[in-house]
Length: 231
Length: 231
DNA sequence: CTATCTATCTCGTGC
DNA sequence: GCACGAGGTAGATAG
Image (cartoon, rainbow over all chains, first blue to last red; front, side):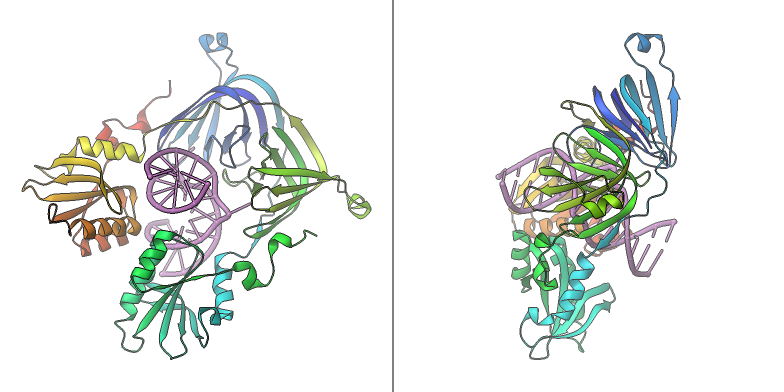
C-alpha cells in the first residue's frame, strides 16, 4: 500500500472518457496494482480508479511538462480490457508506503436471506392460519422464495425483497402465471413482501391482485440494532 | 483529509452487522466527516465505511483495552440513520493530515444518453426507410427512448440500453401495451436496442414479438476509444 | 466459466 | 425533498 497526497490531473479512457483537472488529491496504490483517486468529500467511491489486474508504468515528464511543474506520470493499463488511466502528478505533499499483508476479511450477518428465513419461521405474518409449504420452491423458470397455504388451504406464492420495486412484481407475476397453469397448485395467490415497497410497485401489484406486506426486519428478529450496544 | 495506517478492528451496526478482525489497514477520514477502511486489495469499495453526514467521537481505551494494546477508539455515528461504526485502534504505523480543499470534480463524456443521440441520428440502423418521430416520447407511464416510423409508416417504439436485460424488455412491454391502446399510434411495434442483450432477455423479447438490435457504439461514433491516444 | 441478483450500493436527474 | 434509472456498477452465488 502506497499513499501519495499530491497535486494531480487524471485522464481515463475505457467504457467512457473522463477527466479530472489538476488539484490536490489522495492517490492510493494497492498491493494488487489497483489505483484509487480520492478527494476530500463524496462517499466511498473514488473520483477515478483502475481495478486489478492492471500495470502501472512510471514515465518521466518531458521538458515542457517539467517546466509546467509535472514531477511524474503514471500510466495505468487494465490487463484485460486495455482501459487506460493517465495520472499527471505535480507537487507531492506526502508519500508513504506500508505493507499491510492479506486482510482476514469482512464477516457479514443478516440481510435478505435472513428475511426469508425469518418469514418462513413466522409465516403467520402473512395472515392467521397460514402454513409453510417450503422455501425456494422450484419452478421451471426459477425458485419462488416461499410457497405457503392460507387458512383455506389455497396456495400462496411469496416474493421477498428488501426494497420492493416494479421488477419484483414482474418476477412474481411470471411465477404466478406459470404456477396457476399447474392443476395441483392452482389457484395460487401472490404476496409481495418487502421492508419497503415503492409506490409504483405497490400500485402495479395491487392492480394485478397481488397482496403487499411490509416486513419489519428488526421486529422479526426481536431486536432493534439501533439500540444494540457495541461491546 | 487524515490518513492513518494502523492495526484496527471494526464493528458496524446498521442495515446489517459486520465485523473486521484486528489487522493492519488504512483509515481515511475525509473533511466531510466520512470514514473509509481500506485493505491492500479488493476493488475501490472499502472493507467498511461510514458516509457523511456523521460524527466521529474519539474515546480513550479503558484499562483492560489499554493492556490489550488498544491506543484509541473511534465511535462513528451516522447523523440521519443512527448507524454506528466502532473502530478499535492498536499500533499506529503512520498518521498524516492534509487539507485538499474542494475538488473541481469529474468531467464525463459518453455513455447511454450518447447511444440514444447516435441512434436518433442514424435511425436507419433500425432498417431501411425508418424515420425519427422524436426522442423521449412521453407517455403516461414515462418516456419512450425513441419513437420512429418504419418504411410503411407504422409506429416503432425503441427502448435503448447499454446492457439489455429482462427488466428492459418488461419496460418496453409496458410501453407497447399502453401505446397500442392509442388509436392514433396503433399498431406500435417494439425494438429492443442495446450493446449487449442477455440471452434470456432476447428470448423473452422475441417471444413477445419485440425485435432485438445490437448497437455497435464504437462504429456508431466512428472512432474506437481503445486505440485513442492520451495526449 | 457464464449468467443472474443483490447492494450499508452510489450517483445523477426529473418531478 | 423523494422517486427512478444508470453504473467504467462491484460482489456473491447459482448453474
